[in-house]
Image 1 (cartoon, rainbow, N blue to C red):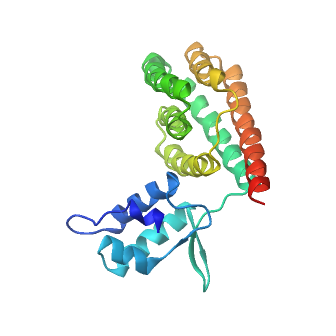
Image 2 (spheres, helix red, strand yellow):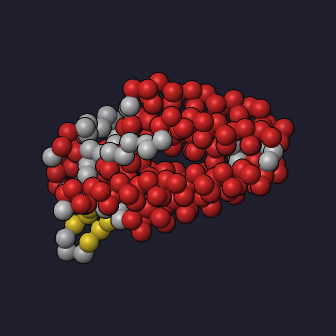
Length: 231
């Protein structure tokens, strides 16, 4: 199976965490497709491990929401719907709004350093936009948002957000979404940084909401077009 081709035998003592990490990356990068079945016996053979850690890894990824277990049928990669997209981005919006509030309330003395970190990530986007490398661009885009949330210093917000970011990336990669406004992409992210540095809480919150709602519109349109194309 194509998804399994990127997996490698584990060095040393195998653990469910190592297996889950490999599988998670293959799911997120699109090697395993939405709705594809993940076969336990096949993973055991490919990774050269016993069934126990494989089963634990699959359970871990099911708890994260990347896999779905169907009774008497098996385990499958999450197949996102338009409703899922709306829920993911609504949750991302809530977390980013919370992170923005925490940063401005608790970390005002660190705003310059936070802005520098975020601006470096934006710089990575520039050549990717020029090259039309949407696959890598989606990764860097999400790295920006992960770094933004991490800057709040709230480990629980970051942990929840990482799962939402993974689901977002599955969506972007498998829909082969090209950004409808590529020229504005870096400016949009830089605008968020500028508002953060300015301490403009109200407009930063407004910009975050607009950013997430535009993503819902773009991804939903792409999903409908994809279903129509394959329908």
